[in-house]
Each structure stands twice: as C-alpha cells, then as structure tokens.
Image 1: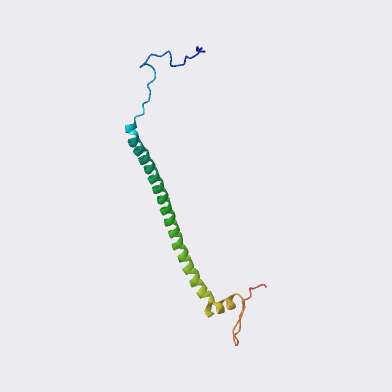
Image 2: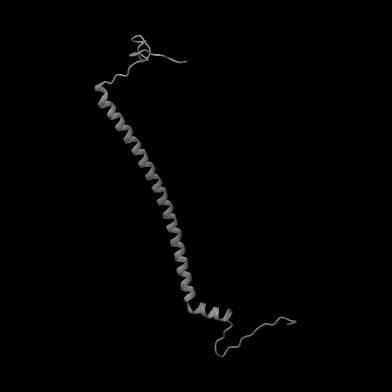
Length: 116
C-alpha cells in the first residue's frame, strides 16, 4: 500500500481531534515522584546485587576456612611424621631393615631359600 501526501500534509493531518493516538502529557508535578521511583529502583537493584556478592563471598570464606582446617591437620600429621623420621630409633630401624647394617658385636643371619 502506498500513501501519497500533498505538500504540508502529514500522517496525522487526516485524523479527527480526539481520535487515534493519545498524546502523552508530561506533568511537572509528577517529576519528583518519578525521580524518587527511579532512585528507589536503582537502590533496590544495587542492594540486591551487593547482597548477592556478599553471600558469594561468605560461601567462599567458608570453603577456604574448611580447606585451612584440613591443611592444618595435614601439617600436624607431617610434623609428627618428621619427628618420627628424625628419631634415633627410626634411623636404626631403617639401617637394620633396608641397609642390612648391624651393630658392632652382632651377627646378621640371612635366611636362604632351599634350592638356591
């Protein structure tokens, strides 16, 4: 469909007053209320955004505290194991079992399998 207009004629020139589109009137008395509404929406969005970030940070903190507790337990176990490994009894045991060493005056007995 093609519309042809004469000079000075527009789309709304053929419409009767009061029919068709309604004009949006801007009332200056409503401006403060509109600004308060926009500000309130902004503040609510900001609040919930920050609340969500805070919740995520608290969950991360709880996970990190759990990891810290686990690592502290492991560290205590490793310190205990280090004390054991550095003790004279452990060193003597390893020297006897793995290296086959004996103290002066002792004799080492080596079992032999039959047929060898």
